[in-house]
Length: 275
Image (cartoon, rainbow, N blue to C red):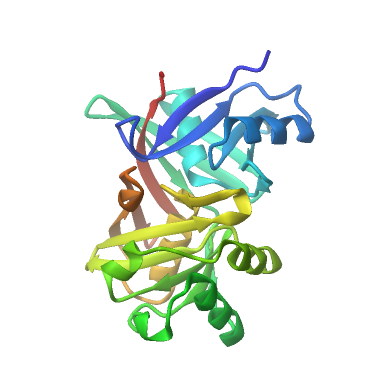
């Protein structure tokens, strides 16, 4: 019988953060079995450790509807389930080192993403995205121009000037899912800048069968790459993301950029779900 553990990532409170399923011994499972388990668990992702891979562990991620190349919150959850120390995850997106340490009595994991990159977004794609979100171009923050960012998965980044607009998320599920599927986008990173180093974010995830993700580590890493590429923060910066508040599942993600590290570091606490 498959042992499925359940953890919350990016919170020290099981009622907050983003829940993830974790299967530490998935060596005997095929793709269909992993997909079925992910659908039954019902979280935005379940991580499966399918065995050793060189010096690391082969890890795959499944949403209720499809396999995802990389998932940050399930990476945090899996690393915390493995325990303190250094871990190397070999994902579909590449190698992701993760360090787990104790922080005020709670375990915290820090992953380092694959090398990020940022590209423009076609005008037609942005118009279609705004239409699906039921947003207007006048809502956009010109200081944070729309781009598509990657740090293991692709995430369009769209920033608005109003926190109220971000709070009133009410998108066209079918239209957004179709657009994301056609473009290979994993979630949409919706952003409001609250302070120089603090952002409120939300992440629609219809292609995974989830209306919204309460905490999205892969998008956080992509956003860090975006901030660096556009020179919106110093080369050596720590950025705080607040996510999940509008869903009643507060999540806190810390993004760190360093001039000598090409990847983006994303940190968060995690705890088991015991009920």
